[in-house]
Length: 110
Image (cartoon, rainbow, N blue to C red; front, side, top):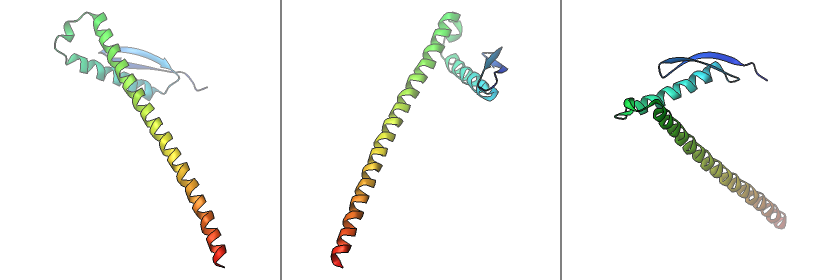
């Protein structure tokens, strides 16, 4: 198991200590993502005046939305990959069958 990393990050203008088995770079990337989402929400008129709990709920909903969209995209890519794998298998099977036919024809011509 890899070593546990601890790093300080800036999220929403506050220094937060994160700890985990991921790299420090990854933890910084997560913090940057949260800051980006907070900045997006901050552009919404009236967001700054909302209660903290409502802001956190909106942030959570936005992150969940990103998650489900990314998950759906990954599922679509997986389905496409499986379809392409089957097509490739079928093409290889057809190629082998044609090679066998070609060999038979060659033998018949001799």
